[in-house]
Image (tube, rainbow, N blue to C red; front, side):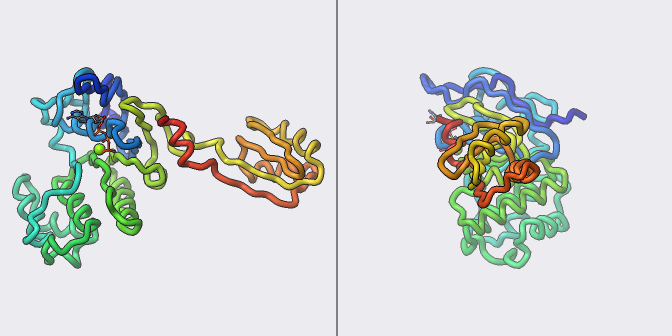
Length: 297
Ligand SMILES: Nc1ncnc2c1ncn2[C@@H]1O[C@H](COP(=O)(O)OP(=O)(O)OP(=O)(O)O)[C@@H](O)[C@H]1O
Ligand SMILES: [Mg+2]
């Protein structure tokens, strides 16, 4: 079977004059955690709605597990689990009871699977408490559990950590990694770069409905480490650094030399080998927020 589990080609959605999504090409491969990163209003929910057959594209198409998806052609979605917004649960029933009700909508989802899901989303201890007493994080995890009941191959999540505190966000992230380890492909949107960075293998950055960057997270942010070196001879140091392969800008400034495009370990080894030992080294990741802002401006 093809390695691509979700594909969009030229996918577009216009609301009158608003181009919510414009010519979007995505390719999500089996087993990856794929980030869909964009600021408010960039078109994340609109895209996900089209992928889930909830909205007609203005142009282009969606293919899930090799089959085209439209609002009238949704067979492929039987293999998909999704969570968009806060999950709808019956508040005065327990988490377990809610899962039981939802399980009845699927074939072959019995008590054993519910037990398994409760374990997976770490709600076994709270399973018999009423959902109205759950924290937002617990509700999100229950919603994720519900989306997983029928053992989907692909999980599509629209901002699953929206509104959660840092601990709640971490629980969701850890859960997503566990799912990926079990071979489930995860597609998740977020407006938080930090979150995508921590959990995703690859990412598409969306701005005003268009993909402005796609790739491995570290590659997109790569080469952006800044190394500052306090040295005795800035001139000699700058000359020596210039011979480092793929070095970026070198900026001598007083007793310091600032350099981009190389890892600090490589810079230090290079200088030590030339007897130009720096007395102080400061490295800073290029400010992630500013990289993101530059991409989405
Ligand atoms: N039903 C609609 N009618 C008109 N405009 C819409 C509709 N749905 C979305 N839009 C517009 O399309 C654009 C993309 O919206 P969308 O909700 O997809 O963004 P988003 O990335 O999910 O944002 P957020 O982070 O706020 O959830 C916005 O300009 C929005 O106002
Ligand atoms: Mg949205």
